[in-house]
Image (cartoon, rainbow, N blue to C red; front, side):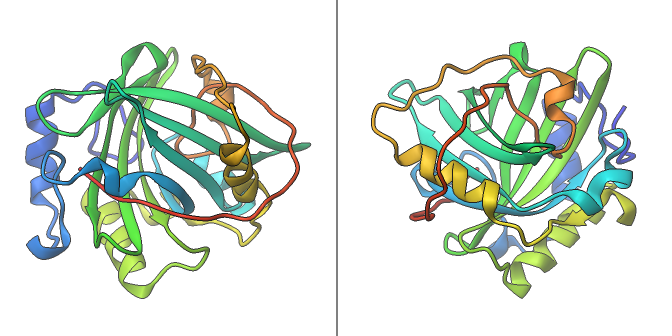
Amino acid sequence: MCAGGRISGRMPAVLLTALLALVLVPRTQTVWLGRLDPQQLLGPWYVLAVASGEKGFALEKATKNIEGVVVTLTSENHLRMLSSRHRKGGCDVNVVELLRQKPGWAFENPSLGVLDYRVLGTNFRDYAIVFTQLEFKDEAFSTVELYSRTDLASQEAMRRFARWSKGLGFLSQQQAVLQQDLTCAHKAFQVSCLPEHHPRPTAPSLAAVRGRGLGWGQTPLTVSLGSPSGLLGFQ
């Protein structure tokens, strides 16, 4: 059961959709999966804020730094995500590939513990609010993340993140604005620019998820820092 209070690990799609529809976000600011061209989500994002039902998140959130995510779409319409997060001793860069749910533009890979990945809302320009359901051997939880094209979130983006997080049952102690350290975020952007860099997606362990609201597989890399470029949005 999600520690966020209202979202279980295996919530049926119909129930999930109904619950999300109850969150009071103006229609013009909400983009439901299936209506947004996924090409708008492709490229690099900063992850600036996280709400998570993961055990221990409230105790660890003060140590979490800004993360980086680079999204690409394969020829099979699989969503490929390269992410970088701060951990003790350095940054881990990981890759996961998500399969498209039909119909619509929600994604999943149950074999990796990702039951649902979808964009709740975006303004097609600055930010995207992303919802994920995760389930591992000894824990199931959900997250809401604020993706931003820059390392500083707009007031509108923060308001939308706060509204979605509260509406989906996350308590204030389960929400965090990540620390302004861009080291690991920039590593994700740099790695994504390396020629012929296609690390094989691997199944995540719960240990790999610790330290990040949205955790992915384990393909640690050591690379030089670089500058971010480009960006995205969808449903």
